Amino acid sequence: MSKKLNFKKISIHTGPKQSPGFLLWHVSTSWRYSIETILKTFKLTHPQFVVLATTGWLTKNGELATQIMIGKMAGLDPNTTSQIIQGIEEKKLVSRSASSDGRAKNVSLTSMGSKILEQAIPAVEQTDAKFFSALTKEEISFLMNMVQKLLDFSHS
Image: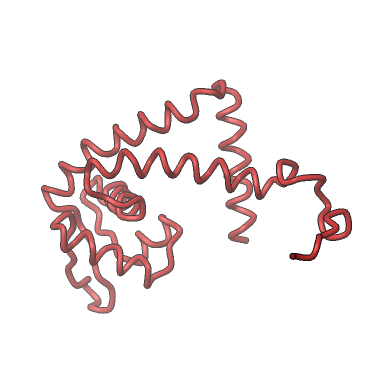
């Protein structure tokens, strides 16, 4: 038999639904599940899509994008970024080349990567729109401002 916990002593919340972190966890796992479901149709994991889309955004006007730039924009550490890029390179969605200084690697979309993104981004955005359709435009704007504020705080 397990020991009973006295939550009044160990938590400031009267229950899990009063915890912003718990609620954020629930909504983020629900949202992520909806995104991962649509990405399966493109044979992409969510992290692969994020790195692929980030690469697309960074190189959309012909600019060069290093793995470091992609990782920073995607919010990933260098090792994870490198592993994900290696995976999508094996799928022939990106290619890597040495940068002019030789230390960094530039990443660019292949034609197959561009074709996948042309289909995947609208599908993900449609899934996002459906997920967030319970909110008004004003609530979505408020949510985005609050999430950006939390993101900025967590990176300060």
